[in-house]
Length: 376
Image (cartoon, rainbow, N blue to C red; front, side, top):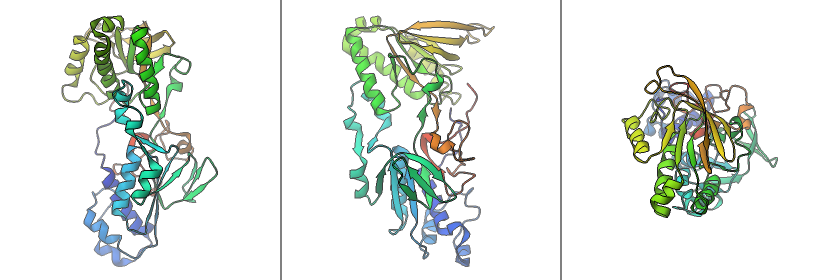
């Protein structure tokens, strides 16, 4: 669940990197006092002033962006635009494809194909003067300033930006690994598999469970999918198919529309009203007890408006198709670096996406640790 705080754009993050590149960790001369902004970590950086600083005669610097998703490419393109021509920008990704994650719900409903939301990183990055290396990171050594890849290749860097996205924490949800009915839209390949499962409902309809598990921090896609799926079922089979596929929404939020943010505008009434209007049953304050092929068992606490005692009850929901948003966790490679991550392996950063422990390391996107508004 995201804590509302000032998160600066990737452009601001890159400008801070620029300033650090120019400072070269304090090795530059007294010329800096004419250009440097006081307390650069806490002060928004002026782009003109940053550009004048980097015009100094420094050795070429290596910026390593680890991750080829939205955060990684945004950082890489911003860096290439702002850095000097002699500075080197390299994107490292374990996949050769960039895939536009926000379109995954459309892929899951055949509104887009995986190919239509994908781009080849080896083709597009060199056109913009950005290097590309395909390989999964296995070890980060901040002292040596080196990143080791799964094939043994070692990449030197001056400044890395970690943008690898999250690991999906389905291992924390009982039964999730063995349930053949469980689907997910958090990655494009998984969304494609979800599309296959949705297609089968036309020939073999049945109950559907959609939601976000305990520990989840991203609730919006679950709401988007449940409403979009309801409409898609109606388009494919009318009221009859909708009635044959009763839908249940399950969430760890304390109330519908909380979104991990204590609500957004009138999200509580809007989303609750839509669920009610479409006949979608819902459970809040819920923990997934077990995911099976034909059922989802939850432990749910009644809300004060329906039961003032707040008693917990166990509910077993039948299902033909289940789509859940799991907890987001960090990759083991980052968690193995002392003090780089929180206990869940997500990168610890300040308001400028900079590691407090390692000033040359930055993190952007869903791999970053953001304290929750409240524990759900």
